[in-house]
Image 1 (cartoon, one colour):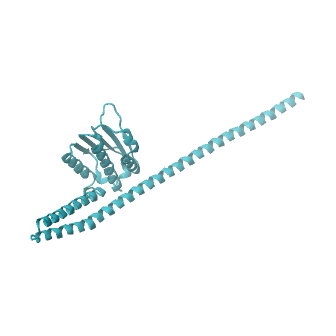
Image 2 (cartoon, helix red, strand yellow; image 1 turned 30 degrees about the vertical axis):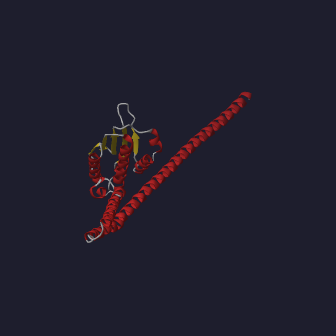
Image 3 (tube, rainbow, N blue to C red; image 1 turned 90 degrees about the horizontal axis):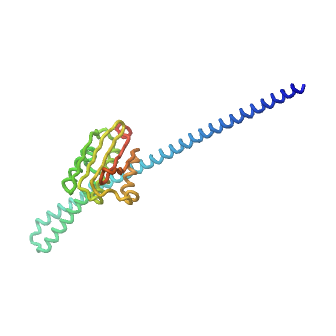
Amino acid sequence: METAAEVSILSVIGLFMAIIFLIAVGVVFLNLQFQKNLFKQQLAKEELKNKHQLDLLQSSIAVQEGERKRIAENLHDELGAILSISRMRLVQFEKTAQQLEEEQQQTLTDIRSYIETSIASMRRISHELIPPQLEQFGLIATLESVTQQLSNTNNIACTFSSNLDATQLNWPAQIGIYRVLMELINNTIKHAQATEININITTKKDQLVCHYTDNGVGLPKELAATGLGFKNIEGRIKALEGKWTILDETDLTGFNAKIQIPYANQTLE
């Protein structure tokens, strides 16, 4: 009887331990499942947050470009027209004002010179806001023209090469890449003391890759960390869902940057 009773107690204890073990396994499983679901929710929340931030950044840049275009058009169509008419009227008056004293005629000439300078400045600002070449001829032709002008007007030999079919790029991508490269060129001219610039744009699989190099003194760390221009570059590349890297290689001199942008995301539908 005692043996049977001991066996019965052991059976109960064994069953009880098995139940506890199953409960423990269930708790662990549920906890793991909870953590997994929580992690998924956090990822989804973070992805939604990043998507929202990207949408805000893209919208902000789109608004900026729209405002640039509006100001450029107003400058060209309104202020440009007023200055041109003023110059024309002044030239006509100069032709009929032969009886004026020499000093007065010089004053008229000076005024005309000021107006012509204002017209030239207005056109330059308007073109910087929205480059007409970019709208008319596209990214590649515009960069070819810019680099050629740079080589002709500065002591910098600037070369540009590309296998990109820019006609397939949407407008945000074209204006974004243009703004980034112009910012890099301006930094080279202002800070690098360089004599050479090389720009290459290629497509590799699903990536648009741009290499920008100069043979200047390199990039000061404080400029990369706090420079407003570089923050603008980062913002525009991020808006195109891309990334950029400033290369630091021992066999390279000057400034070397690599920009990568998902090509499929930036093509025309």
